[in-house]
Amino acid sequence: MQSTHWGVLPISSGQPMEYERLFVDLGYKKQLHPRWLSQWNLTYNHATHNLNAPTSTVPTLQHLSEDNLLFEQTHFFNFFDNDLTFSLGGLVEWQTGKMTQQTLFDPVSPYSYLKSSVYGEMNYAILKNLKLSVGGQWNRFEGIGKNNGLTADKATTGQVGRLGLVYEINSNLGMKLLYNQAFRTPSALELNINVPAAIIGNANLQAERIETIDAQVFYHSHDYKISLTAFRSRQSNLVTRVLLPAPQTGATFVNGGSGIFQGLELETSAKLFDKLNWTGAYTFQTNRDGDGKNNLSLTPNHIAKMGLSYEVLPELQLSIFDTFFSHAKKYPAATQVNPAAGNYHYLTMNGNYRLDSLLGSHFAKHVTFSMYLDNVLNAQVYYPEFNRKKINTISTAAGRSLYGEIAIEF
Image (cartoon, rainbow, N blue to C red; front, side, top):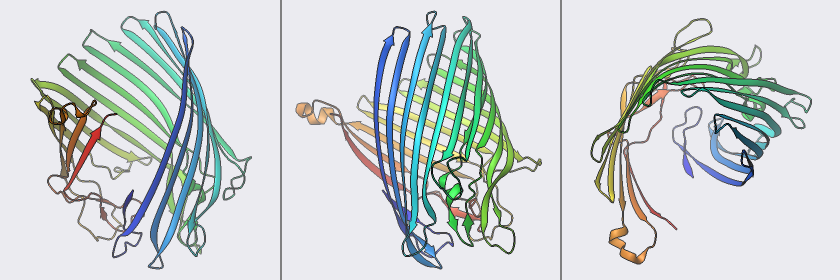
C-alpha cells in the first residue's frame, strides 16, 4: 500500500510512503467435553513501513519493521443449561522490531519485548431476567535483552477487571450497568526512540489505565432498536510529551497526565418501510484534565451519524451515510498556518449489484460489482495538529473519490 507523508516541518511537497503487511493465523478448536470447549491460536504479524522523512530539510529514507508472534489458548465452560458460563485463557506475545535511517544513525535500535497475560470471565443468570458478569486480567510486560536501558529484570505487571449487570424488564425493554478497566502498554517508539535534539524515548514508562462506567437503557423490537447510554471514563498515567530540561533540547515521554471524559450516546435503527432501513446515532462528550481544566482532548463535542439503505431490486442495493462533526478545539500556542478546524459533513454513497442474472450459469457462485463514492460533498477537513502542536491544523481527508470493486465467490 502507498500513501503520502507531509513531514514534520511540514515540507513543501509530499513524500511517498510504502506499507507491507503479512498476517498468518493457525487455529484449532476442540470440544473436549459437552461442557468444555477449547481453542488454540498461533498468530504471526509482520509489518514494514518505508518513508522519506526530512532531516535538515533533506528527505532521508527511513525503514521501520516489526514482527509479532502470539500464542493464545482459551477454554470455555457451561453449566446449568448455560445459566452459568465462564472462560479461562492466557496468551504470550513476542514482539521484535527496529527503525533504521539511511546513511545516518538508527532512530530506534533493535528491540525485543515479551507480553503475557492470564484472563477469565464468568456470566451467571441470578434470575431469569437478571444476569451478572465478572471478569479480570493479569498482565506482564518485560524487555528481553537490552532495549534502551530496559533489561530483562525490568518488568511491569498489573491487573484490570470488569463487572456488569443486565436486567430485562420485558422481552423488549432492558437496562445495563457496566464497569470496565483497561490498559495500554507504551509503544516501542515511546520506549526506545532516540533522535538527539528532537525526541528521546523513556524506558521507564508505565502502562496507561482507563476506568469506564456505562449505564444504558435499551428497547428492541422486530423493526426498531433504540438505546441511550451515559458514560464516564477516567484515564490515568497518560503518556505525554514534555521538553527536556536545559541545556538539553528536544522532548521526551513521561507518565502523569490524567483526564475525565463523560457524555451521552443515542443509537437508533429502524425498518421505515419495506426495503428501506435507517440507522443513526448521536454522541455528546465533554472532558477535562486532572486539574479540572476543560478540553483535555481536542475531540469535537458533538458527532451525529445518519444513514439510509434501500433495496431497489433483489440484486441492487443503494445506501447513503452522513457523519457530522462539530468543530474540534484548538491549541492556543500553535502557529496559524492552515484553516481552522470547523464543522463539517462527511457524506458517502455505496451501491452493490449482483451480476448473477447477467452472467447466467457461467458462474456457480455470486459475482458482485460495488461502487463507493467517498466525501461526496468534497468537504475540506482540517484537524488540530495534536502531535507536536507547532501548527494549528493539518488536512486529514482526501477530496471526492470514487472506488470500484468486483467480488467473486469461490
